[in-house]
Image (cartoon, rainbow, N blue to C red; front, side, top):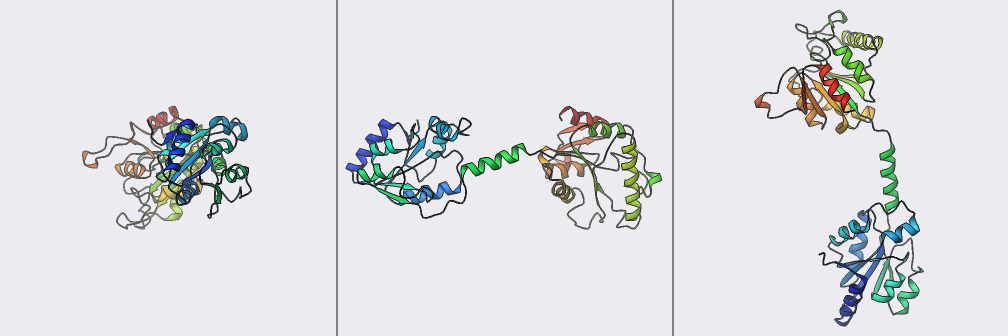
Length: 335
């Protein structure tokens, strides 16, 4: 049983004993529905005013009465358990009324602490000063509130979540070509790739190509030719009922040390920023180990096609599939 959590009967007895011992008791009250840094500052400041800090917690019934039936967000059992884990707090007790006037009159702390927004002329003042206690206003100004946090959570929760399927290009969407695919005429879709992308296009995932293209650095492929290749890929897919929402490529040498060439995750981060993508809800499909490494580094679910990972990699994708079509079925079934 939690030694800090007390019933009203217990806390009244404890308060009386503390007073006999010459201990200075401090109290503050609140719903403490979602704890934040300002609460901790309040507990610390309050504890500094005396020997024992007692937190008076609005019950679920109390909060529903004055904040509405949808509150609290966290039930009192959870709220008081969290409060009891805070070092500055010595005891916590629940009350059912809207204000703590009644329980204050019974435990009679030497000081009752309040925030600036309530002020010294609060509803508790008459009761506290009536038994000889004092009201203390916190010095620090509250910079946030539980209600503000709850609104932010609501905004995030109801905002449409953007997620993506990232696709490697060479060996995944199109067949590899000796050397490099240097022009649109050399770009050939892998068997089943068009059907796979059509299937993915029916979901709400962004479909984004992430590809290493060091042929540009080697002057084997020009950026203009690469643009033509990608334009052909996108237009052919569109004509057949598929879509590609964006293409990101790394033009650097393999040993350049850049942050964008897979298995580095620069291209994924750029796409996430551009489209506000939740990477943890996204997928990566590729045929090489570096695709899996990059995906796992970016906290993206990985599907490797065309064979298993090597033992040396000491890493596994979330799924294996024969090809892009097989991978698309895995994603579609979980979309």
